[in-house]
Length: 293
Ligand code: GLY
Image (cartoon, rainbow, N blue to C red):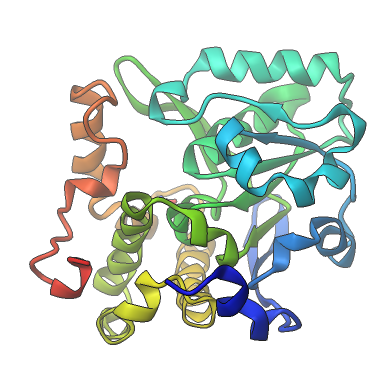
C-alpha cells in the first residue's frame, strides 16, 4: 500500500466537495476532502462555526487522529470514552453528561464527535439531550460513518433489549469527512463501510456497483483521489433521502437495507460476535467478487 503522504500529496490544496443538507434544524454542510481535518480549526472557521469545542473521541482514535484537534479542544483536552457497540449505552451517555457539566457547558457550547459510528451516535445523543440540545459537529473517522451514520441526524444508544432503542433526531451543524483518515482503518472496518457503499448502489445508484468493481484496487489501497468522489456520491444519495424523509416515515427506510437483520444479529449475540453490522455480509461478497480482497 502506498504511504499516506504519497497517496495524498496531490490532494492537499484541493477544495473539499460540499453537499448541503436541509433539516428541521436548518441547512448544514457535509464537506468531503482529503486533508480536510489536518487543520480542523481552519475548516470550522471557513464554515463560520466556533473554532473551539468540546471534542469527544475514543482513546485509540484520539491517538491516531487527535493531534490536529488539540487546538480545537484547547487546554481541557478531549473527553475520551469507550468505543464499540457494547459501550453504546445510557451509562456512557451519563459519563458525557458529567463531562459536559464539569466543563460548565452552556447552550452556546459546541461538541465535536471525532470517531466512527458509535462515537457519533453516543455523542450526538448526549448533545441532543444536554440542556435540551447543543450544537454538534460530526468528524467521522470510519468509511461507514462518512457515508452513512454521520449524516441525517440519527443519534442514540442501545438497550439490553435492542439496538438504537433510545435516541433522537438531532442534525449536526457540519460533517467533516476526510478520506485521508481512512488509511489507518483496520481492513475489517474498511470493508464494513464498503458494504454501505454497495447498499447505495443497490437501493439508488447501480453505477456505484460498477465503480466499486472497476476501482476496487484503488479503493482497497485507500487512494484518496478515488475515495473522495465515491464518498461524495454516497453522501449525495444519503442527503437526498434524508431531506425527503428526515424522520423515516417512508423513503428513509430504504437506507436500512441490510441493517435490520444485521442489527438483530448483533442484539441476539449481545454485541459480542458481530462487531460491525454490515459484516453479516448480506450484501454478499459473492455478488461482487472484487470485495474478496
Ligand atoms: N443509517 C440509516 C439512516 O440513517 O437512516
